[in-house]
Length: 162
View 1: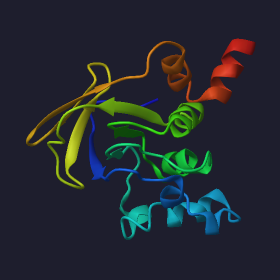
View 2: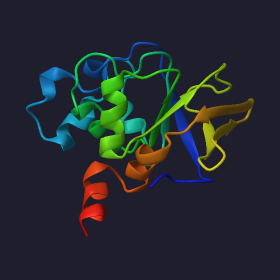
View 3: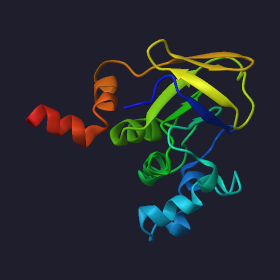
């Protein structure tokens, strides 16, 4: 479940962040705990040491492009990222994120935040508030929201089976 009304850091990324940036292929043989040390290292030096549980990413177009590598959203969630907001997502990344319980939100407009600024997320009203403004976003609906609210596809399936 996403944290509400808590100040979190926002990490700003550009367009076309691919799954190899998020989960570099050269480290996939390592445990998830070791892989997180390399998450987004080609874009943000020391990213894994900067993230605090509950932080978010705000990116541009086509976030998660590349392979269908499920490790990408798994690493983001494992490292402590609770949500990724982008202008658009790769279809596969979007579904993989929902399946592992990583919240994907889509926004329009300009980003009114600076990198690593503390922001407040209101998931109920679909907006992120920073010092210089508010960024509204669209939230997954229907069954996608139910899967997210359950913590991912495995938990959702367990809930249905019980």
